[in-house]
Length: 245
Image (cartoon, rainbow, N blue to C red):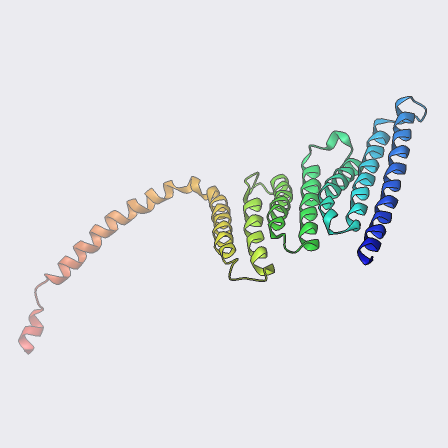
């Protein structure tokens, strides 16, 4: 009986969410019809913002469904994706969706979405890897547009993926079984740091002829040093010192 009561409670919860979805769909459809038939005049600026709000509402609908039980927590992924798309469209507009700023916001939203999946289902450790990759992509878009030294080299992505492996190990209960994450994270972070060091030193590569100049100075200096030591070792003893002995 208790199980049936729980099922009825869950069904009532889902029915309320279904009613909410139906009302949201009807309102959205009526609004879009009014815009399409010029009943409500809307400029491209206003239309993009309306579409952004609708995408955010759709994301919230999926988010509401996650409260029905752990079997629907996977709805966090479409909820995060739709809400992120809505935020990008609402803030930047439809025409700027492929800009670096839009890429930063979208990648950050997707990364936070997978991070939320891990926080609600701690046994799904794999969600930390796409979370790290998306957050690294957001940092990549941010650095590529603002730091000419790094440019569009994927150093932030590689670095954040390596850090996600460390996060998997630190959040694991059985750390002995997840020690492979330490190896994978160390190799990935080391590759990112070597990549970054190569980018920082590439600007000095134009000074490589200076090595020829230094080598050209070292060759005669070396011959001079060898000749000086040879003359010092083969020099005759002082006559005054022979008289004293």
